[in-house]
Image 1 (cartoon, rainbow, N blue to C red):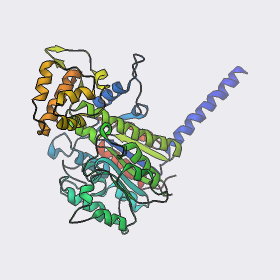
Image 2: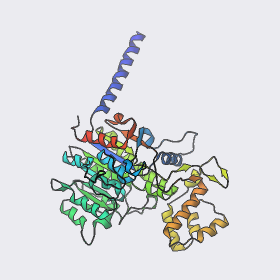
Image 3: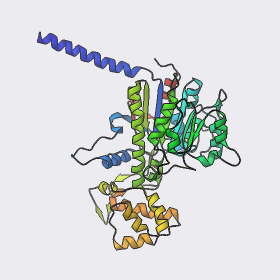
Length: 445
């Protein structure tokens, strides 16, 4: 009798597993691709240590850790060597084809490449782009526009409207920074979008009150890029809120949707060797990932893919200082920062005292020589003061950097929802784009 009970329980267990596998094999109706720009593996480790509550010797899991399934190679077309920029990598994710650095969804011969967003639109799905940079920056641009150089920002802004399918712009929901590129003297793209039925919003309150029947939405929340998460005022939405509103609008389409969400400024912080801003922007991006995952878990017909376009800065958690290699990383000091170096510098320009503003923003302890050195910096020289401040913070926290540019290391791959198991393992960035295209080009089951 006991053997029979055990056999029955085993069979039930097998049926449960089989059911889960079957569920994951379905083709999803919706696909959400989330790109943490510059989010290399060392950034993930730094953020996990930052979020850890210190209650045990085992670090607390982040939202990302539950969904890790592999890694991604990000090399561009070898014309530019083996380290990509955001434009080439975003083009690979958007089109499934490698190209040269700086290219926005054109191939190495500058021939236009069809994007996954355009394919989704042709199949009757709704489409969306969300970013904390200006929305016409390299990564979001690669999904909706085509040009030989990412520097053609006015042309890219124009294409957000001019690139149309069935007399409608290809992107139904556009949320991010970049108002100055869209509301210009030579051309008012905001008015043009409104003429096509888009609701326009420019602050957090307006976004929260978006009409329940809205199907088209344009939100531009800063003249160029949005402020860092830790520096934002009450008028600026979080990446999580923008993601939530985008999903809310797009999910009203019974045919489904494609949405790309970028945590844009993790990369910018890496370029500046600014560990404080890295953590700020990772916190913003993690909350957005949770928003997307919560929707997918409830919806059961949405695939969420989270990855990076490349790593930035060559971050190392440990630094040889004063001739000694310390076996520690100063994460506890980083936990005391209330806002980023950008706000510290802004406040210092009014007070004239950079050292005092740094101490107000954190629990950092400065020597007399360090105070003197900081207060000698020319506060009108933005590049120099940013460099000096970040170098000091890095030294105090034993944070190392190998470059102010990108690196060629593989980035992590996370996924959840129908089809996610098919991405497990090591992938090329073009494979991610090709996989999404294969899902969108066929009907969900």
